[in-house]
Image (tube, rainbow, N blue to C red; front, side, top):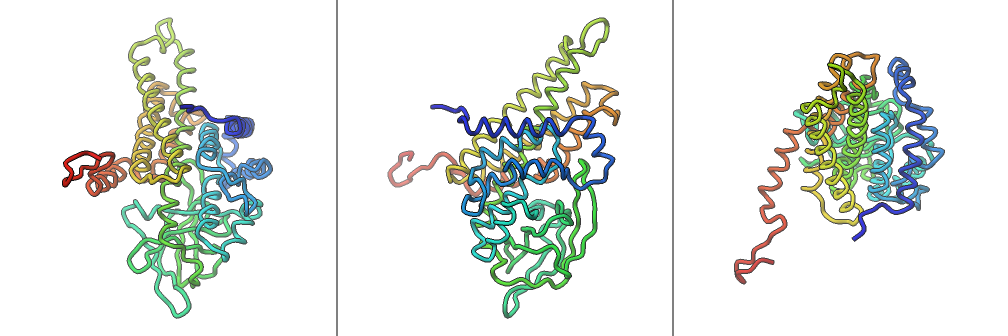
Length: 377
């Protein structure tokens, strides 16, 4: 069995890596930190020009119609470069609308594929302590939204969003237009510099076409995990690479600190954590692209992404010593990104609890016993 990427997939990865690395030099990242810009608009223009912004959007809407495997490789490159562009949220929001939004959503998908507008999404209500704070109340000709959505990425820069609302007690995705006068916004910035905003909904009206079917959330949630985990893979891989280079050069007691056994063991541990995340993520993307159910695989990948981000991030900071906390040195940015990605995933403890709940209800995972026939199936 061949587990290698095909020629087209490798070409996409190389193009994305080249674009991200050329733009996101350490000097430019320092400048962007101080710029106050919500995202890297120059790099986003490059993503639109090369078509990276529409890989996962259906061909019928003007996208490339590719899968999570291709998007994963682009996001891996994005994470390694710390490129602040809205690649995955924009594409997955558009892909979800193309799959489940019907004819009413088609103009949004086409505009997103053409790079004419930004789309965003937020699923934090699935795992944060407050839960879903946006309520949909039935009206004669649709729904009325009342409540709050916390920390929606690029809410002030995007034209529309997919957000979670409680509809008759159940979580559902709804499409909202972010210029609606019933939505007020409070701006903020995440630790790694991405612009967010809290949204307050005051009687925002929706028609029935803006409420997506229940299956949309089940389709989107594991893809969101795969996207965040791919970013974490890129962040952590570059973090390890830079740290190995540092310990190979840094001298102490007339020898490189990379020759010390404790440092070698620490770096070996980071490599193991990185490769475990990589293999688990690849399996998840394969299953998603093959149309296979992936609830436990998605949660396991989310947990490993949070663990890798935390363990690799802190190991890298520790090995760098005092220079690791110097803001003029680049390594701290990788830890900031890991913290933000872990927060977006929900954190290790929350994910482990969700995975435990899933396993308690699916105790025949990979093994089914037929009591009547007394044989394993």
